[in-house]
Image (cartoon, rainbow, N blue to C red):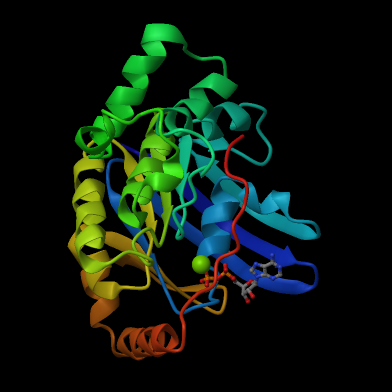
Length: 264
Ligand SMILES: Nc1ncnc2c1ncn2[C@@H]1O[C@H](COP(=O)(O)OP(=O)(O)O)[C@@H](O)[C@H]1O
Ligand SMILES: [Mg+2]
């Protein structure tokens, strides 16, 4: 078994603003791990620090250590190789709208020169099947991704991530912009995928976290205030207060999310 991710004393600054303060979490392999907390507490920053996406922003400073499958991704030259097997799914489905359904899934392997021809066709099909989208798109693989519904687009983004054959999948509120039916489909998918892939799931929704994950962390103002079994975390009185706060933020409009380039 062992650990998929170990974050130790991680701090992240955007300019002079500290967004993460000495965060430490341990994510076991082969599980779903939930990151909870109110809007603005640093959930997305933590996820983006794990795959180094935060470094795309100007003026970001990172201190501390992130190990993914044992490799220190900020210091070890093998970090790039390890991160090539880390997928990411964002809050707003963000396929490349002008690219075809097929090309959206094929883009990662193509950029890495990993497969082509029939092998690539098979990989695309496999990823779409895993993402529960194949049956709906098999007859229109060459159509632009923009023709898909929101829920389908999110499953396409999951397929795009899966085409990289990730050992770790980072999901940032993947159901926040979906209707309940599509959200439920994604939840089923998370359950299914977690048999083979470690998943870190950022979510607003404590109930969703409990349906999907056994362990997790609760963040507040850039700090981990609780880590461990969700059943324990969510039974503590102040966790309930925080969750109430989360509910309020949602009514007020919830998180914003900046869209970012995603592929290597
Ligand atoms: N690119 C950025 N530049 C400056 N501040 C940022 C940036 N991204 C996030 N922040 C700030 O960092 C804090 C954590 O944000 P974020 O990680 O997005 O939280 P969450 O995902 O929990 O809503 C917030 O105060 C937010 O305003
Ligand atoms: Mg966020």
